[in-house]
Each structure stands twice: as C-alpha cells, then as structure tokens.
Length: 148
Figure 1 (tube, rainbow, N blue to C red):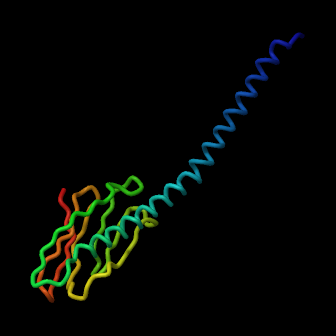
Figure 2 (cartoon, rainbow, N blue to C red; figure 1 turned 180 degrees about the vertical axis):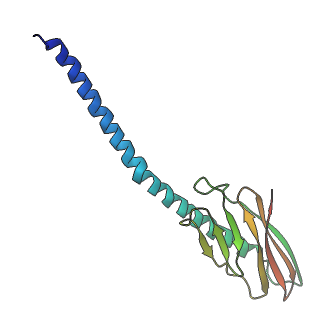
Figure 3 (cartoon, rainbow, N blue to C red; figure 1 turned 45 degrees about the vertical axis):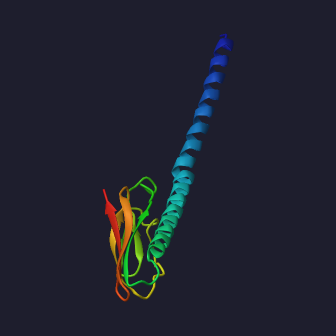
C-alpha cells in the first residue's frame, strides 16, 4: 500500500487541530478569568471616582454663609458603570452608590458646614442631575434632584 499522499492531509489536519485547540484554550482563559476580573476592577474604580466627584460637587454647591441661600448646581454622572444603571442616594449624612454588582457599591460622607440641616434625595444614572441648596442662615437644606 502506498499512503504517501495521505500523510500530507493528516499533517495539515493535525496542525489545524493544534491551532484550534490553542485558540480555544486562550479564549477560555481570557474570558473565563482575566477579562471579567479586569472589567470588575475598572467598574469598581469608576464607581468610587463617581461617588467622590459627586460628594465634591455637593460640597461645592453650598455657598458661603448668607441671610438666604438659593443655589442649583448641575452634576454630570456617567450613564452606566460596568454597563449597568445605578443610583446615588442619601443616607442621612452620606452619599451611597447602589449598583447591582455589590463590589461597585460605595459610600462617602461629604464635608458640609454645620448650618446644613439635611441632605436628602437621589440621582438615577442617565438623568440630568442637580444639587439644590435652599434655606437661611441657620437652616440650609441640600437636595439631590434628577430630571428624566
């Protein structure tokens, strides 16, 4: 029997099989471990940065002591974090980021003057968000408001 013509075909099929196996293992490794961990780390970092910048905007919205206070400051937020909508709400004296991924959740307490009596409201991602400050000398209210 003369199988010399068949050996070239077998060699090419084995070479192709090895390449397909290599690509499959590489894809499984990247998408099974490395890429999701990187996306989670980036999402967590973006969530933390968004929360800190929001607290800074809330702090900057409170004007100096005056007889009456009425201020409105627009706050730009990312539409999504890690591809998902989120909420920033108040919890007494803190801003809380609520995200479906618990590793992205966070909390920060803005440094507000003692004349600020209350911090209230919530922002939904994707909305036009503002900080409203109203009141008088000893009674100032800070409210997070969103408009669809």
